[in-house]
Image (cartoon, rainbow, N blue to C red):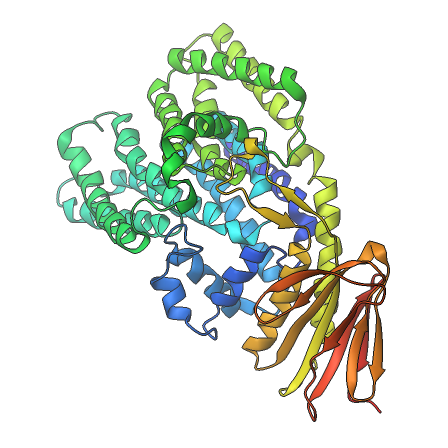
Length: 532
């Protein structure tokens, strides 16, 4: 087997290792409120679709029309199957990993070092905060688009070399500009890749010449600047969360520290304690020394500056979520790959290889690639998916004009976000939001199909199961005594403390056709409200 074939096998094995933690989720429906919002509003059948995609500051945070359009495309591919959503997101994640490998190669890193870049990107735990969440597709999609632009810009100019090829160079530059603009309209953090474009060109022989930089980078930089102006007009400035506008400067340093830590220790992933954090920090400093000594010092320093650029961008936004570290995994992979490319000498090669091996081992100790997804979260997701699938099956034959009312369990309780989480707002969340997202998703699908599904009440399952009771022409849900519940009142829900015999009226109008879907003790009971 040739060296090229061995590398191909290694790439396939690494991609398979990066995919396996998410296999259990490939047939699961969306479960988070923002995921449901992206899917439902991204449907061309939804009211106000054009405004949502092209004219809206989505979720009052950023302008991401390509992200919105991606869900329109997903629906066109087959919105009736959960796997379409999941396979799309997993393919984008693996595609980003493959593009990291290709970028390392066009930067003239040797094949083993390019494999290191791919391995680092796939094993970093920050991916666990992105791949399972459909609403975070902008991270993997933005990475794919910006990486594709870098690979093409750095890898194809040789094909356009020579006399009479200047038109080809400019055409390539325009295409690269289009990819970078699309990346920016997918996620604003893609702007860092635009800044990296001339810096990476400058690391190549003759790449720092003004004429060379102008032919490869001028058009992309101008086009992205225009796109940024359009984005700023729509979002009203930098974007981000309005609630932290006055605190941006004060939050910059804590967010910078959280960003560096979140790359390897996301809050949802079990870490190895302070000892492992110190070991990884020391290993990273040792890798930086190797980069400064190595044969591809320029690539390593640009990658290091890319990490710093993302940290600064997030600090300026004034908010930090662990998922934001996903973009940082790209320069992290190139940084370690550059450290794996020593200048010369067998002893130097052994030292570099040992340092890279230590770093990868320390990261792997708490990576989903080795441990799988965090079990409490995975169990919760699979349990919720059973609720979602049950509701989909129960409403598949819902006729236009018929109304289905939902009675679902939830986990009562509220909690404040930790001060150290650096979230944008201190808000109180109740644990029913995931089940509510399932109901909203199924109800939204029904509405797009011209059918009616109404959320009626959420009850505390731990307090016991509700029961259906009919008195004359009125239908009631009788709740366990003293149990907290949430009842639909107009738009949204309000929390109530029920009395010894708490009752919720099913608002079925006289002459209407309806059914009750009562989810209790792990099973869904269907009650015909028109039965005598």
